[in-house]
Length: 349
Image (cartoon, rainbow, N blue to C red; front, side):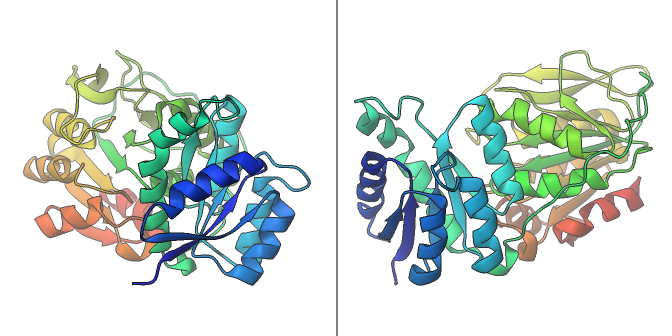
């Protein structure tokens, strides 16, 4: 089998050496070149034609975001962002997903200190795994998102509980899909929405803010006691899983810090199972791109309660794992591409 050809991009010569050695240690990967700024990156992508690019954000001359946008125009290539995590860095990384990046790995905070070799080893397996996933992606799936901003203020939401809920579970490749589909919910959505996205906890706040800015409905981090109301989406907060408790006419948010059998938080299964117990046949479950089986039991619980289930199809999925497992388990009513998901959801509400 041919090795995965990787172009490593970082403005630090030391980091380029560390990343190159790390990737070359895997027998399935070979680093075919490096670049120190965005302009050099664009030129090397044209000449080297790598299978995957690891890309830093903050670089001289041309930054990573500008380079990424140009790469997707002239030579679409799977890109895994590899940059430090700061608040600004989190927002830039999410912007990179809009510009076509496949996924991201957070560079250790003390990347400029002498302990970098030890710290980098902590993310070695994650970076290698995501490069291998990125290498399998059909380049025709790489597209730039340009979400429209709100054209007016969201309608003020009264605290009247909804009798319906849409539960969305998402993992690797999911943030980009969420940025595509959440703006499709209408201002007058009669259902509430619960979202469980597997991602590093540091990104949750910035990601929630970004979804809120591009969506017509309200999107916010869930808090204990929040009434689940129409036209409101609740994101599972850092290190917690959203669960639902029954109230007089609907449901209210509770949060659980219990470990998941899938070893990830939030737990999609637990969120969907709890929602199905409260909303029964008026529950809709949606499973997006991601690796593993989280969400399969959740969709099964929704179906058994009389609700409806939808899975993202293989053609539009960056990682066709969770949805595939649910389809094979026979717990999915409808399989549709990402751009048709909300259309199907609205037919069921």
